[in-house]
Image (cartoon, rainbow, N blue to C red; front, side, top):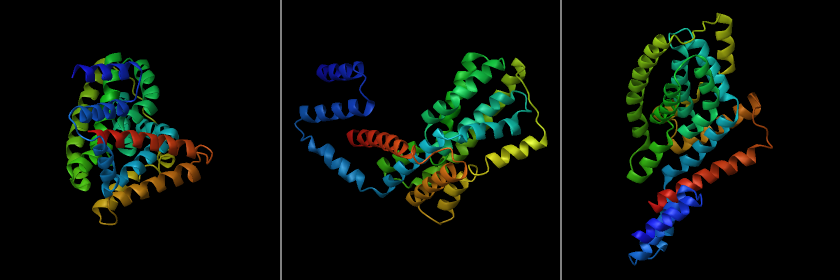
Length: 281
């Protein structure tokens, strides 16, 4: 046991990725218990044949493309128009846009990376406390994981062999309830700190809606397609990835064809790490 702890410490100090550390621990544990390490390879082969796992790399690709486009800015602009008039409007904007963008991308880390640099300075400028601003942005990003297409829910469905569409449905109501509670708290906090309120004219609302009009149907495509019986989760992932690519490359042209291979490589590298973690666990 001390040897395994030492190996873990050395790998962590060397900055090894989490999936490398977990895979090394699994292989060393199997070796110490006299189990053939090929069990991990067999488990990888079994996971690769799991139909539900096919949706994961496609949703990751869609989320990566969205995060590298100007979709976060368009959603932030729309939220500012719709919610900026509320007391604590900026806090409510941060809550809603982080949750929605996490639902689009399926990963809270992507949301914090894409939106944190925009929202955090704005909240500090709006006289919100630093700890409250940091906590709200990170919490909102994690809260979006309850909404489809959530990568953790897909991973849980693969491991527990549970229907992913049922997991998606089960996360919606708790997610909306927590959004409501955090929204009320953000409004009270904004009223106490007298945060900025920015009512905008109707012309700005029409402009923001037109700008974000292509991203807004994404939840409808995923949920409506699955629960309307048009396609299963894997097909929904393929349709979502294709839709995102067409919108960001052909409509908005935020992503050029030259950038696409690098985004695909990054997405598949992330999926490979998740795949190794699943097999090692």
